[in-house]
Length: 279
Image 1: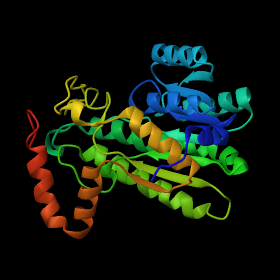
Image 2 (image 1 turned 45 degrees about the vertical axis):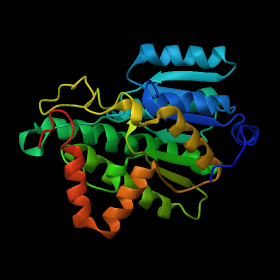
Image 3 (image 1 turned 90 degrees about the vertical axis):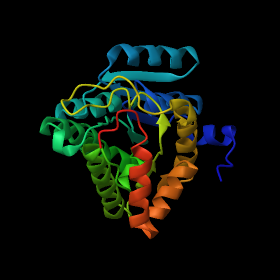
Image 4 (image 1 turned 180 degrees about the vertical axis):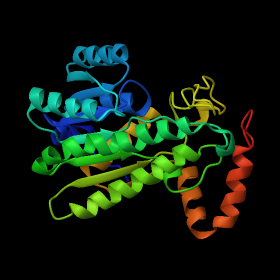
């Protein structure tokens, strides 16, 4: 499906400006290197200033162009500053990748409400804030707005109520934004990764808002963040509007749409296999 050669992609990204939130690890970091390799100018954003600096230096070492802007997407003023600094440096925005996100692992019954708020503030409102300030520039370039959602933006997942809610909200927001701007040339791409090897499960919050630190799943069997980034880069060139990644992810989404009761049982069975499953 993704037949575009690297040299063809580079001609599409050459001198384009790509902003990536949550760029200090996982899919965001992988996207930074992938888009930089294809000739884009990269703006790196996250709360982890030290990691952003390392990534910026490495991109430059490889002959790329990048800056970082320390950003907490939960804060409106930080999101506005991110866009202002990007335009100040590069004078345009061609792609915004809303990737910043955090997960959780606890039953809602046991979860402190502050955890749900943290997930909504980061995953959903972070996307809303950055998009609000970037939108005029994206419309000017007929650019691309990307949301890194999840298979859970399309299905339920026990033990992750706040995460699932935030991804469903992101999907609804971006799909509606696509329709509002369909005559203005805005390209909106929603990416639904399946389980991807990244730091998100180690940083996932427990019922009290403390990172669990250890992943409950076998990371080695998952799609790599680098592979996800490659697929995103190609889908952006082709101006696709929706990606569902991994064979398992595609199967679960299809089953949920067509056989929801069966899928509920399958999801419960599979997630109960996790070590210290909360349900």
